[in-house]
Length: 297
Figure 1: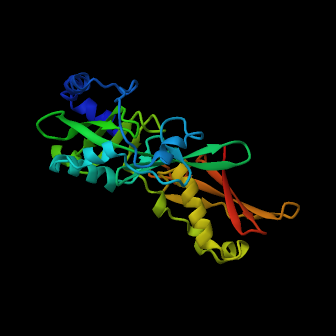
Figure 2: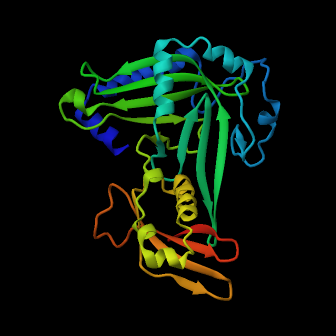
Figure 3: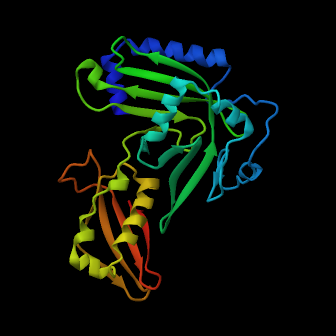
């Protein structure tokens, strides 16, 4: 998001683009806060529409399958080349919450969000899935260089209601500044209201401790299980993490039959000497060989 703010400062023409976006929304009769309701639709998967007790908005929680409705499937059959290209971008990016607190994946018209719910003693990873389809697109460019642009998408959810999804693209190379192209995506369908950016890195997080012989011995050699557990926790809580640094200690709590240890969280903006970085406390359960994580604040 900071990158987009910097682009806006350096590209004053982008201010005028907002008028075009507003016009598109007005013409389609949509706002990102109040969704219009279509009268009739037939759901391919009624169960996915009914399971909502754990979800603050439409969509499902847990492992139940989510399918496109007939109305959504009909919309996807009308995708032109431009729409297909946007879908390719949405599905091809590794989306991280702009504030780092969650992740998003889009595949075959299904949005999957992972986010954490943490109390003082434990952290739970929540999953929200919901289907969508694109019904209209308006593309807006900030200036002739094409350095900053928006695709404003009209989408429908599984109940036939309309929403606005915005895909922002910044291409520094267009202005000779160099650097990679990056995207932001936001929609009122998302659990994370702040939106997502394509800088998710936690699946490839570096964990040097997993190669430390003493550490491996302390956790019974269960390095693959630990890595899988840590990545799942990071996807829901710290999706831009690039490295986890072990503090070098493992504490065994005999009364609870567990061992605990701590990692410092590093990302692309963390300084090498930053002693104030966020830390994760991991508990290794000796009886089940399972791991659980919680933030230390």
